[in-house]
Amino acid sequence: MGIVLIYQSFGTAADAIKGFMIRIKRIDAIIVNSDMSPILQRIIIAHELGHAVLHKDSSLFPFRETALFDESSRYEKEANLFAAEYILDDDSVMEALNTDNTFFSAAAGFNVPMEFLDFKFRIMKWKGYKVVKSPITSKSNFLRDLEVPDNKDDYCG
Image (tube, rainbow, N blue to C red; front, top):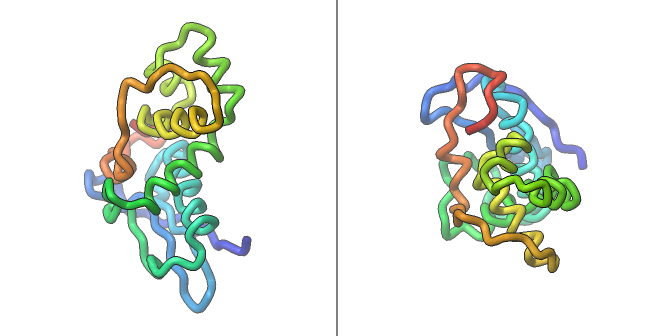
């Protein structure tokens, strides 16, 4: 795809930038906060990759930062769905749910925020899978509100 991936320190403050995509002279780059856990970095990269794939011709470029997410944004919802589908495969999710895991323990087992698993459930229901009703309804801006843990080994929630 020709997307440049750049890791940059943005700190761990509550309002720290997690990541964004930028396009300069037809060159796309994803910039991700190097102070986050690798798990959260992967989610942010997949989310921004979703924008690159799904919204390539969008006028939302050249700058997008997770603080700009809001519930009404179709683009953010689509990027979250893309990231959840990219990171969590259907068989693993079904296996986790069929081993008497709760929704919350399944999310913890996958090391993803519960909101992320909710987006995966939406896709699976759309595909025709019989999954339990998610106990939460995630907003498209959930990534904005995730804290960046001080310990890079911490999972992302």
